[in-house]
Every structure is written in structure tokens, then in C-alpha cells.
Image (cartoon, rainbow, N blue to C red; front, side):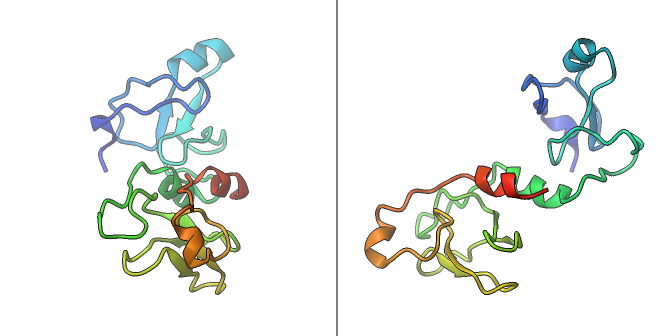
Length: 148
């Protein structure tokens, strides 16, 4: 993926960062000036770049790819799906396995890794049929807090 088509936001100051980089490592000039050191972050997982990792290499933060998928703005757009509007990717609330919904049937899914059943919309344990109508789609913030 070419990163030069969009401007990332710095995870620290939340300002758009001007870059023509195609690498994961991005420098925020504003934070660098404020911190009086070069402030780098990973474009994908939105965490500070590890000091021990070369800016020309790949991010070495734990769960970088998992976090990047959960941060993604991609949503399920199928109007016939019971999970329309949900983030495309979810982490199992028990084991953090990355999952998506196939779009068929109810919003409840079972993690193939740990067999936890949960609602893809609200991430709670299985909703009853009556509750699905009132079930609120949540973002992935809670999942991201649990992932190191």
C-alpha cells in the first residue's frame, strides 16, 4: 500500500502529518519540535516508533498488524447484512483473534480459535433475538485497549 496518497494523523498531537513516505515510519514535525527530539510513529498501528527499530524497517511493536486492522476505517456496507455499518474487522473479546462477519444470518458469531460466541455489532455475549434490534454498533476502541 502506498502511504503517499493520504496524510496520517499523529497519534500524539492528532494533526495531519505531511509526508511522501511509503514506509511505516512517519515523523511528526510538530511533536518533534515540542519534544525536542525526533518523534516517529508507525503509520499502521499508530503507536510511537520503537527507538531500537530502524526507520527503514518494519514496525516491531507487538500486534502491529492486528491493531492496524482494528484501526481501519473499513466498514461493512452490504445493506442486506445484519452487521451493516460495523467495522470490517473485529477482535474476539476472549482471545483477540481477528475476525470478520460473512454477512449471512444474525450478527452472532463464534470464534474459531476459542469458541467464544459474541455479537459482532456490540461485542457482547450473544444477544437474544429481541435485543438485536436495540443492539448498538460499537467501534473497536475497547478491543484496542486490551491488545498490548
